[in-house]
Length: 293
Ligand code: GDP
Ligand code: K
Ligand code: MG
Image (cartoon, rainbow, N blue to C red; front, side, top):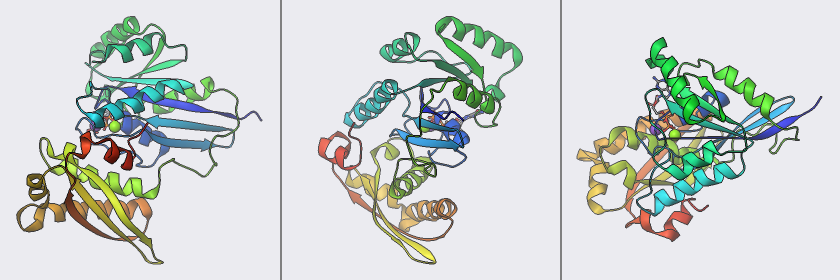
């Protein structure tokens, strides 16, 4: 039996459904999902293993024009996703225009590696709209094969996966066959907490937040976690904590529930808030949080 393996990298505008698709392929919530742009800040691997294949998917941040160092680094993750792909998944959503960054768009239209253009969220469209959109994208990206999909409802997701398997080169596996991702447990704890912050705070707050898990003790019955929520300024600290600590408490309760589902174990989660001045523009801090690329 010939074994196939390779790298399949998902790129596109913010909020088109990249993380939803990766989770659907892997069958686990590896990437956090919210309706806000810049929910995904890293390149996250999701590995799908079979007896005769290993598909190494990469979820990436949505393409934006960077305004500060953190965003520069996020776009670095997108660039790296062009470099090692065996198959590119370029995701767009119904009604969307092409990428804001022309250089990325050019990389897609001139790509020598196969491009599958995934027209997502077709659950929100009708037949007529769908047909005209397919026509539009065929003209814009003539080198791509187009798949209308719904990542949320799982429509055509299996067909895309089968096409990926066709296109993958013969190769031994790159990772152990029981491995699901390249990120450590602490990464998923940080992300789970950050998702709750994205969901519950307005405007600039979620973008000024970074999470660091300081302690992770796994006992027989329970996992004990202490995480620090870092903000850029003192005023943001007060907002995160909220009236009598109620806002922070809600984040903790919801994150704990998700973490219990993720680890399949009882969780004790302690969180506190700390100011880390202007961390988003500080190279050293960014390296410390894993944004080097
Ligand atoms: P990303 O920024 O590209 O990673 O997008 P996300 O996966 O975070 O999804 C952004 C938003 O679009 C979330 O609210 C998702 O629930 C929603 N979404 C993703 N896929 C679909 C889909 O197929 N149909 C619909 N209606 N919504 C979707
Ligand atoms: K999003
Ligand atoms: Mg995402």
